[in-house]
Image (cartoon, rainbow, N blue to C red; front, side, top):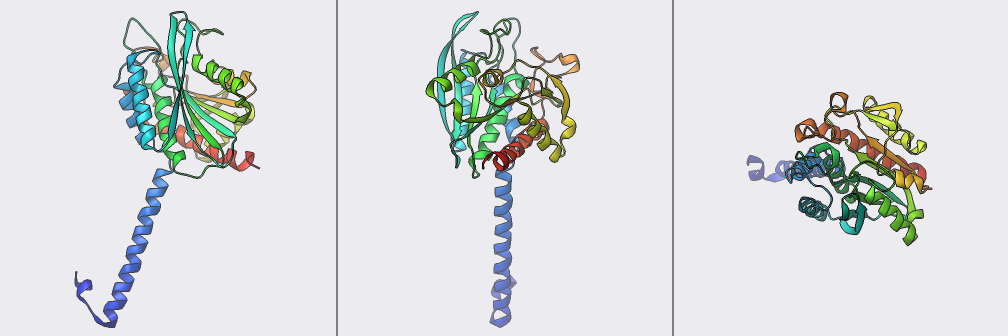
Length: 312
């Protein structure tokens, strides 16, 4: 208050200095805000996860999954990201089931597309309520936060954030049971002549585990997996990404079979001897915002590396 009251030359100098200080402070605050919005925040993703889990079991075709879609669409709208519904009817061992892939599109300087994907439904169980916090919830939560990050920056690639429906098998994984949403989308992109636009697909699944441990996936495209693991080491997260390869049936397989470079980031060590997987123990307390942060930031770093090396 005293500074404002002073007059004369000295007062002008003080007011001038105060003005420069104020501008510097405003610039610093704005810079920190911009950096925060462009940094993947696992805490925000964990809040998304909480809201999804609160809806209860969310199997394909259920009202709860429709509520999850409403929540996802609302969060994407707040992020300024356009989303479209890819509706289809799947023939399953339980009969015809309506399913919906959600595709959020973020424009880039080029037409080439990089897809970041995961499934958002939970497996159907009749004998216990399956919350699917990690298996179905964590991937959807990560994609929502990824949308917030990518929507606020200039992108070289066009990005699609794809929320797959119907990843889970109704009985056992076969060529016709499971991976319904990803198989449908590959067929649709092939029919529309758009499959050739896909530069790469990064799939995330069960990545909220508080004891994070992601192995190389045997069926994934080697150069793309190498890029992910190199990015993880560069960020100091190498201990969470194990070089020992394991093979998984997941939503990347239809894309790999169609000739698209794809990699699967999946933690299949969920609890002692994987005992939380597909059980009533797949609950929010087994998940961690730290794990979401680690995987999210590794994916962002991978995208930066792809833009640096693949956009020539």
